[in-house]
Structures are given as structure tokens and as C-alpha cells.
Length: 392
Image 1: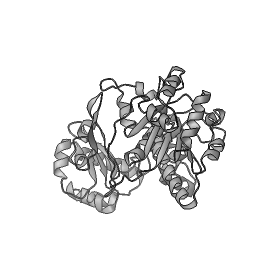
Image 2: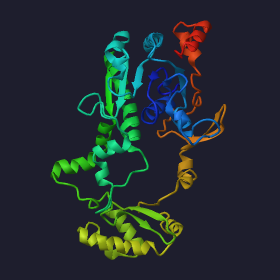
Image 3: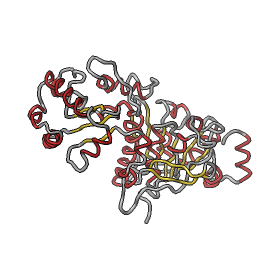
Image 4: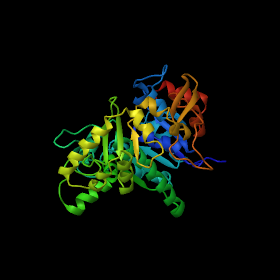
């Protein structure tokens, strides 16, 4: 069986987390991803700890199923090689600040004349237009500007930084993969490529659909810690157990809350599920006192088989050994030529006919130079000359 995206070729200029995550999702399902890196230095993720033996765990986790080509895009010959490669790919992904590709003479207006079917996907913090287009930023900046940080705090408390860079991964990488796939579908119907402009700010805002819908409907400020998804209600909250662990209760629907109250023999609490905030504070305290009567594992055993929506707050070492995670094969072991057998996360979407899998490990810097340079007409002597000149 062919891979789902077999035959789709991507020239990937992205680096670090957001773009690398997006193109790896596409590579895992069969797209040929040519990772274009700077000579000598490569993707900065190659140099960040922790390391297995000699290679960064971050780089290995974000670049499997890709091939590496080094190319100096500031050199004239590097640009000519790049243009030849553009003729042979379906998609170009880049994550420079707006205007960088144009200053290199390799912007969309130039490249679309070379390849009319090219999908040119730009991922940046704030997009290609607007007053912030050239502004630097990182995940914390995007989630702050999008308003998420104003909601991630207890009542009368300071905002809490999430451990997951949500804007980078979901607002950036996931949206990039989605944007590329939509553009492929459009090209299949209309025969031409197009420019895809993605901002992590815009992606982050789209993830806040429920919060923004509430504000745009009611037109009033959120009161921190007073909505049903941020801990205001007893039925959707985190509770400490006797042994200092925590359990997440998400009995959102009435039937789940009812089942929970019956299980703890407090049916008198069922009618108070959506009581006013002053009552909720007392209700949360009441439920908390109940959870403190048993250890986390005792509560897990107690609620086993009951329809409640309750799970412990697992640590990472517990997650990877969880039977459900194992059943879904979300941790895979792969062989790497220098690092040996390493473990990585598996594939989030399961297809019956074209599943994702690891077919090549993350590449060494410039490992596939000869393969792609030969494709555009360079022989071994030419390639050695390019290396000596710092073009590759």
C-alpha cells in the first residue's frame, strides 16, 4: 500500500519547533520532505540538550522521515540551485520573518513564475501583513496577545505559563499542516498553486473559538476563574488526594455529575451542579474534603468501570506506560545509525489503509546533498567544489 501523501514533495526551510512539527506530520504520512539547512550550523534544534549520545532529542523528535540538504541561500550559486529544486517540488515551507525571502530574491512572485503549481507556505508569528508583521515573538507573546494568558489564572491570581507551547504546536505546526493539505486539495481541483500565509497569532485565536464566541455574544469581560472550563464549578475541577496527587474531574454533563454524586453517596449535591458562584465555592470545598479521604490509586480503583469522566493527573513516566497509550501505539522505538534504539511519540491519526510510520530516522546535516544535487545536474566534482566554496 502506498503512503497517504506519497508523491508529494516538500522543500522545507522551517526550523526550530513550529514548522518542523508541521512538516514532520506530513512526512510521517508519506510526503518527501527535503529539509534545507544552513551549511555547517544547520537547524538550531540540532544543538539543544538533552542529547541521546551525540544528537539532540529535540531534533530527532521533530525531523524523522526527512532528508537534509545544506545550501547557502545568500550565495548566487546557492540561489540557482534552489530555483532548480523549486521546479521539482510541490510545496515550499518557510518560517522567516516577512520579507526575508523577497530580499533573497526568492519570494513567491519569483518562484511562482518558475513553478505555477507551487504551494508557497509562510509561517510566522504575526503574518505577512499588519503593523506587527516584522515584530519578533515567541509562544508566550502569541498566547498573551491572543488573550489566552488573561484566562489562565485563578481568581485574583497571576497568569500561569502553560508547559506546552500551544501557539507554536497547535496554532503554528498543526495549522501549517492543515493549510498545506487544503492548498493541495485546491490545486487538485484548479491546477495551480498559491500563497499560504499562516500566523501563530491567528492560529492561536482560532483555537479560542468558545471563549471568543462567549465574549462576542455577551460583549462583557471574562471574570477569571468564573467560567465552567477554568475551575469555577465543582463538576469541572482538579482535586488533591490523600497522598498529595491530583485527580481531574470533568463531569460536565448532568448525567456524569449525577453518576459522580451517587458514587460518593452525596446525591444531595446533584441539584447544585450549576449553582451560583457563591455556592460553587462551598461545593468545591465539600468535594475536595471527600477526595482527601483516599489516595489517588484508591480513587482510580473506586471509580473503575463507572461512567463519570474522571482521570488522575498523570506524570510523564506514567503516561508512556499507560495501557491506553500502549494500545494506541503512541510510543514507538526506532533504530538510529548513531544513537541506537530510541523512543519517540507515535502517530496521532490512525488510517486503516495508509498509516503513518517511521521509514527513515532524522538525517545528519547535509546527509542527502549528493542525492538532490545530482538530480539538478551536479556531478561529484561539482559537489566537492560547492562544499569548498561554502555553498553547501
